[in-house]
Image (tube, rainbow, N blue to C red; front, side):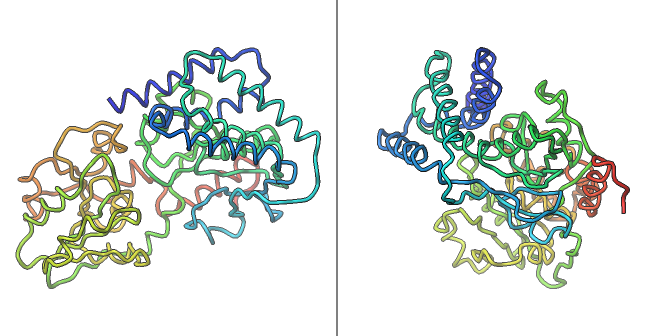
Length: 422
């Protein structure tokens, strides 16, 4: 049912966009910017209170009043290639690539023309949204606030001397505004990946180019008509090149098994932790890595278990920890995919039927990872009787550029700009 809601919400909003034909391009782009927000949240927000709607209405009024004194900035340097991201993992990536995030700043210079332009387009968007009978109007204030954010960022952002814009997130209004502004300014745009995707929530790429990590990603992106003009680049996950510095060095004494817990409302990984704990030997140690956003109280029963080590310190080097393990299990953590770059014996575990609406495509990932589907298979793995897929198999589907994805990206940028590769 969850899958149908997500899919229907995308189709529902897409049908709405197809009927919007009597507005200018900028208004249509603004309405498109909240497409993903609508698909993911439109129906779930029905339970929101009147207080929540009032809060968003006040935020809209505040922004409309003080907008003339705001400016959006992403570039401070004079570099021609910019990676727009909120992720700290990219800091120090390459001296030729500027790393920046979207910043909203005060500046005291009233711009009446720009303010009026945003007001007019915002009112037009509100009129179009409220007049359509095919979409949910519940908690419309939530969507209007983010739509206004798009209009303001697009109107005020200064793209500087950028010639190539690289983005990881191209789904939400603020990022859509930056990408659309770049494209309208003739700036080349490249979408990169640093995590899982699925065909439910990730069905379009807004950028001109797609730095595709591997077969798994190409299979999902290429199936959608909205990506028919997309230009694919043979790529990888540039932030993951650093994993090549870690080598698998398990202990020669006790076997160490790592379970990477996953913060999820869909799958209860406590069941699978107990499954692994019941299958390991009496001399083995089970390390449980708690997710940063997880409720630590869930793991209280394991803290006093002499066979378990619960890791709650978020400052720990996850990859150094992984390199000391003999086995690694997880329900669907991205960290498990990263672990597969360090060691071979990494397994996803899920006994039941699943769909992509769970946030992870076990069927598609099964071509590159081993998925434990029964307790007996788990026992066979821990006995060493099951030979799983290698690290190299993982690279093929998820990160074909590893460990030189950064170099591949730089080569692609040079090719796009018509420059000679260094």
